[in-house]
Amino acid sequence: DTDMAKEMVELTKNNILLQASQAMLAQANQAPQGVLTLLR
Image (tube, rainbow, N blue to C red; front, side, top):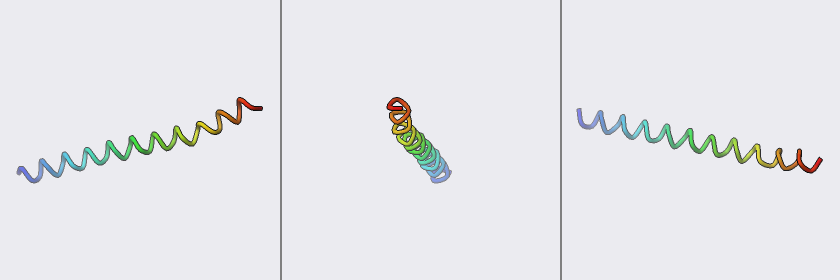
């Protein structure tokens, strides 16, 4: 049972990290577009 709980914690942590990195990537991709829009 403890192993199962540990696995669930690991899985949840990894999912959160994955979502966070995806969000950061999305923001990083949007930033240059915003700069280009300002320059126009």
